[in-house]
Image (cartoon, one colour):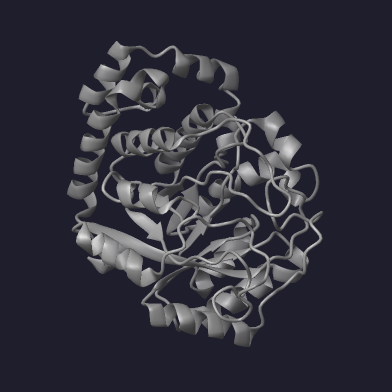
Length: 369
């Protein structure tokens, strides 16, 4: 049976990080000129040696994105269904140890949230919960998807990892995509930040994309949480994971997201800072590595940064996000999972895109062509 775990075991975190930092000016120039870039080119493009070439990278990234996707931006909105969680995660507001009021939406409340987002124009929704099988397991998600498919054409989830047969059931219900982030590919650091709960099982989480591929999901989203470990190494291993998945489950599409640690109730300072320039470099490097992968940016990032990268590689964006259950209309004041940075309305974001020659698309771009 295919498993990314086997491939990951062949690599050393320290060796790959050393290789990235050893990249030279000549390596970067070669990567920029190479028409069929591989993972070694990707290392060069995320290395410190590539910093003087950021403008050149951005120009190439912008042109590749325009050629591949046109002047469009896929728009989506997260809908938080529950903040119940059985895990302890040091960086999350929903962590079991945080003494917060817990909330799980009822059927009627789900419909109220859906009506608000539908009236805003959204047709692509991302359902988010804490990781609590007893409260928001596969039965709850199956019911939610069946309710929401009458409102939205594309339903994605970001919940606890499930078994293959459970994913198969949700796909039959109408599930379109699943986002599951490894958080960090550094096994020892992962243990530090996930000391209790099912999420503490590094290998089970790592194999989630394999289970999704075997289940026949349409799209899988992967990524790392920047701030837990060195962003360059985590990005390399995310790219390694992407290339493995594309080769192994070639019928499935893939997306990459770029979450950076954001403030929440309890707080965690990043171990390694990732600047805006670093994040821009990484976005461009991914686009130069792979013209087909969806690159998504959330409202974690600032208005200025999101406006800027809308030209330079990103082709999927959220707007007016609420990261608390019922945050749109049911219970706006409940505790958020993390603070957002770009708090502009959907209408303002859409107008910003229009002014920059970009057409907002309200459901999955592939189904819009």
